[in-house]
Length: 243
Image 1 (spheres, one colour):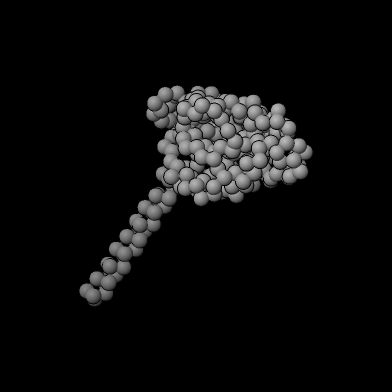
Image 2 (cartoon, helix red, strand yellow):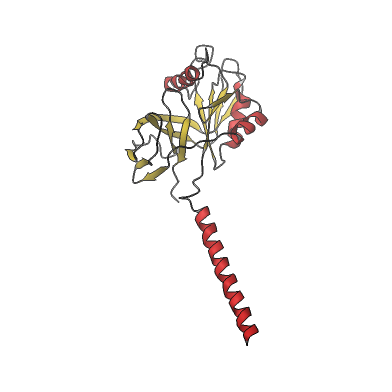
């Protein structure tokens, strides 16, 4: 009888330990404790630039990865050289210039990729891009989506930060180029940025920012918390798509 009681006692202890380990594992894997950090990969390119298609192809290849926010920005300074980029906007050119000034660059160029607003590379080398993504890090506030608002959680920024709304087209877009360096080619674009909206400033307290109406229901939405004037991106989040 004592041996049976001993075995039963050991079985119960093992079950309790197993339940405890399971609960601990669930707590460690909880979204509230293990929030996935997005790596933001921004490509600045132009359809008039013959060096850009390989970098765009590299961005297209990672555009669907859940842990990466890949964004393609068309810039305008190639528009007078034979072909006007169909996706380019002055605001995107200004964003690249903000990065250039923050990183002490004398000029801007294409193609150029920024990783979390911190590291910049040309972007044509797939291995170099993968390495830069692997070494990216961020430690900013949480970002959530609630009832037509983006909610930035509490934190302790060293200075007030910009909150950006980005809307981009997740579909593969084909553009036939009729002039310039890429004349006669059909270029493939994915995650083309169509809207870049400054929602406001986050100073450390939890804050909600109303979302403006989207130009198209076909666009995906993301939000960034970023040090102003081309500084590091502290946090990023994609808005979940309703089933």
